[in-house]
Length: 241
Image 1 (tube, rainbow, N blue to C red):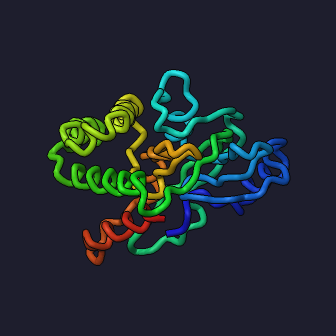
Image 2: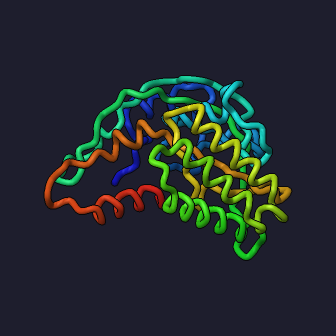
């Protein structure tokens, strides 16, 4: 499916054109929920996003985690506009997304770097993505929030993390706590959401997703031609985007 946050939407283009922090700034990347722009600081980027969960994860004084393994916001511009989700999606027999009016947020965040292949951080990122996915599939807990804590407890007993990466497990504990405290978030751990700083520090760059927007956008019609495999395939396409 198409990206949820469309940067060529007229309302978004107006913000990009007129907001003092974004005016004339080059787009350097985009995801399902956000666009990333250059800033006037070579060590930071500007993030324009509809992902409220991730925005609070990085900016809220009470909810944001303390671990140095998470990307650090350095300036918060707050809410800068409003966006209607899913209006660019054609309705089909398979999908029937719900349109939501959601805030658009802007904040400045540290610039991170891709993890080079064949390095310890590369091994760590692959291992975390696999172990988290396996733990999620094995869990018998229906509600996602306590399930995240169960997965962390299981990983903490693993020698790979216990001996070599204990601070990473502490960070995952904070991640699980966040989704328990803020019930509109889900953990989104895959390779693209794990990066590093210039000094080699392993960083979870954007490990949270907004559950309300995701569920509204990926609403499936109960028609007989839709199979479980169809739904699994679409969700996999989203998570790998």
